[in-house]
Length: 612
Image (cartoon, one colour):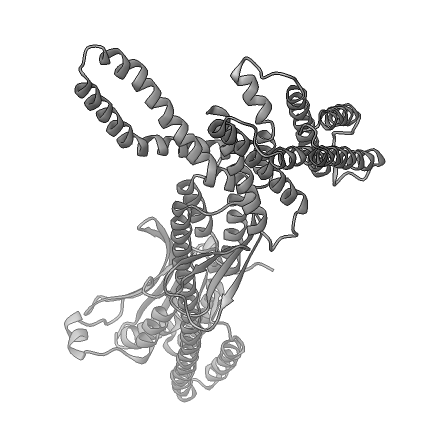
């Protein structure tokens, strides 16, 4: 019975090998493995038929059956040698391959001759030829270089060793007393099928055969334990009806236990095959693509990761331009696997993995994991597209805003220059009437001032340059007010390099003289100062223009509801330049004077003028 089970198992293994070779026919067809599978099936089917024939009819099976089975066994010697040495170009390997076929053909010819001559099959001479051939091939293979293709050549050594042991036993006169030796001798072809499946189709072997075989072994082992330690001991104390009930209960228990044992068998095989932990793979891919900002890089990373995880020989992706894929999908074919990555808008993408190693077929949980990954990548691509579109829109809006701001600032700058000019010309007009000589000197200073103002097109200038412009303007006004106007400028040297908007102080100085000093009978003083202050842990520049002239009540300012061109211009420029971080403050009191302050942030080094 064990022998029959072994032959059935061997037949199924070689049948699986035959199916895998035919199924993967899109690859270069492997005639050697195909021949091995056919020979293995014929050997196991022949021996199983012979055993059943003798068991049912108590006589030897028709002589054709052992002739075919032993000829197939002899042919396995040739294909084992050829499969292991086909990639070796050395002369010794070629000689060994030829010798293997010669020994196999000779043994087959001797068996066919015995069939037609009515002699015993298998022919003892054919077995002796195979023994001599196997031993000589085994001895010769020892001298082969094992540095390259070591796995195949080690497989050859193991296969030849098993064949030699089996052939020595089969050539004996009597059956072996020990059943396990008998089993080993008759099932010598099974390790060859297992080695080929593990080497070329290990995933198919594991998924289609090993998991089920291991599950059956586990359930058989549990059933044996239950029978030996439960059923047998208590049967002596029970009547037949009770014994039958116990056996049925144990049978139901084993049936209920099978799903658990099957899961354990799957886990064992998965651990042996070292399949990837898909939860870990998903997390790794998710973390990796988060740092990427290109669709090409995301898809290339996915290809690389899945190619390594699924042991594919090739991975590539392409765009699907026709219409966007709405749902993730995994399409399996003989060539490999195609993964559809969904996106909201076209193009969507298709990732292709070709030639999965070891005859690998995707399990249901692997397919679901790939669909989840496709969905994750698809959402990332959608997010990337939205981010890019948003960035492009923001860049366009910033460009439009910048152009609008530059145009507005140019208009404001153009507004302040004539305003300053008209007021200064009015001053010169007074001087022409009262002091023509001072008027000439003042006109020259005005020319210098206007040349400096109109020559500079920079929006920001160093504070020192702004102070020079203000000083020139004050000199012009002193020519008009003489002793009634006193000035004081206090600007620390370390602040002179700070850049400020051009002509930001002149309107404040002009207002101080126009609305403060000029309205006071005794005149007054205009004091200009600058200092660094800290607000909310940030550096600011405080510019102050203080006069002790006429002044006016704040209620009058609120009542008027408007500010002059100069102050409105300053507020608008500060708003455009500093986006709410700068401030203009006006404090005034009638008969006391006015204090105007500008607070500018100086948090960035580009607020400082370059020294050349």
